[in-house]
Amino acid sequence: MNFPLKKYFVKKESWKRFGVKAGVTLVVLWAAGAAFASRYRIGIDPQQEKCLPGYTFFLIDLNDQTLERGAVYAFQAKNMQPFYKDGTRMVKILTGMPGDKVEINDKWKITVNGDVVGEGLQLAGKLHLPESHFYGKTTLKENNYWFMGKSPFSFDSRYWGTVKNDQIIGRAYPLF
Image (cartoon, rainbow, N blue to C red; front, side, top):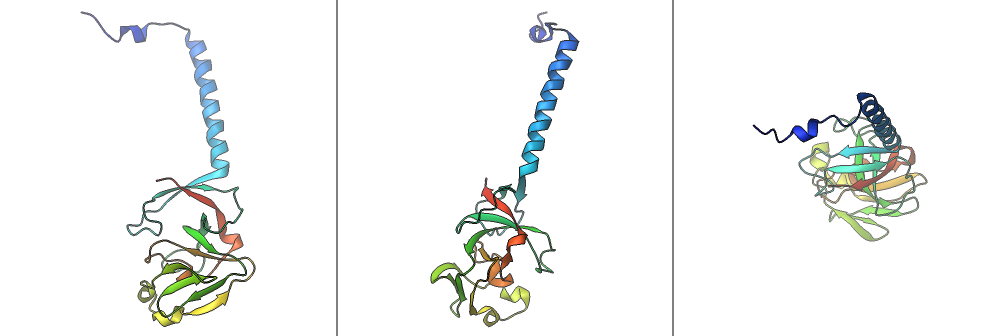
């Protein structure tokens, strides 16, 4: 009887040499993993109704702190109880920066410097507040940023207000 896998079990090198190669490979893999983990985190959005539809996984670059309007960032939730504990990682789009004028009108339109960045206040009832509680105009102060999701069902700055600079974790890149 012919054993077809026999050629893979033929001893071609010593165990010592194999051990050295395996050890070097493991050290290289460990170093690459440590380098990756020191700069990046993986973010997962487990919600059924996603604030950024179509994306569940995000690569968060801890070293990229350059804030750019329209880019996606991760930040730590603060004062969003009982829905989110302080420190919960959130991923949203940066739509307003210090000095920008933000308005939420009675037609449920959210504008930044006159440009519509979102619509809807569908979640106001979950906070046990009337929609009119959220209407108003403001100018964003220094170190205050306005973050929005793309879904009208996103819990974002329209409900919780601004995010401070020290809450921002880093830029988030949607993966899939």
